[in-house]
Figure 1 (cartoon, rainbow, N blue to C red):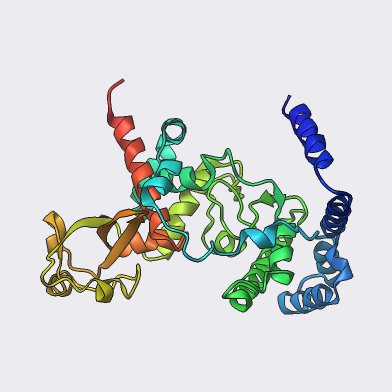
Figure 2 (cartoon, rainbow, N blue to C red; figure 1 turned 180 degrees about the horizontal axis):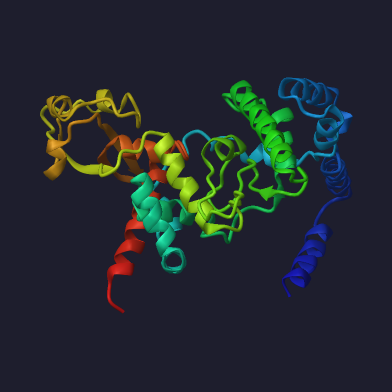
Length: 357
């Protein structure tokens, strides 16, 4: 039914185009089709990269050349990594509603119930609360329902060799994806997996927890004890790996992620407090001296804090004092909105789990 409707709509739309527009559209489609079938064996730069990678890593040169050479340009991917248009208002309430919603909460309850032992073991072993792990996997992939269906090597090659110059940090990001492509092929060689088989996101992230290849290499663990790491099909491996990732990024057992904060309008120095962004920089006392008072048990916090601002569109922003554990969550995704969505989704699921039904 959907396909028939789409075809009908297409022909109605086509009949409204003048001939010149149709010709231009045909040209664009031809170009897109050509781009979609473009293989990186045709790119001298990519083949030189393959040769250098093989030499650096001690990999079989022809295997690396074939792996990269058969990677395809994904023309839609460069557009997806561009930042939003300047001036686009952020809205925490709208962002939250995308993730902290009934479908995801129900799926999270099932995931927690099915993997309660592994979550409890990860919390004991790594000190990362089960609700944070559940929150991450829920935000990332809706508990495995949306792990991405692009070939990882295509996504990584596209961003390694065709990262958009329009991005303000194009050179830095291009280098990042070249390193990820190198890590991916090293991982495929070590595990004996065909590099053209794994599927993932448009950025090359894989599995239930959406690990980039470098994170897989550094932090993925065989948490189910079957002798191999499978972040696609083993929920236990994904759970242990997410927890290990957080420990590797400074997670401190028992520390809250954030505290409530109240402002003294007479002494508030908001610009100075927001200048470090989400990097914990201020003590409770130094925040108070600049007009931001950490509330309740947060007043006894001894580590550094960050003033986290969550914009609400046309409404007044929300603020919290983020700890080093809040910052650790942002190592997964550099966004205070993302971190708070993970925290609040996990909390809602934990509350629902504790509520008698």
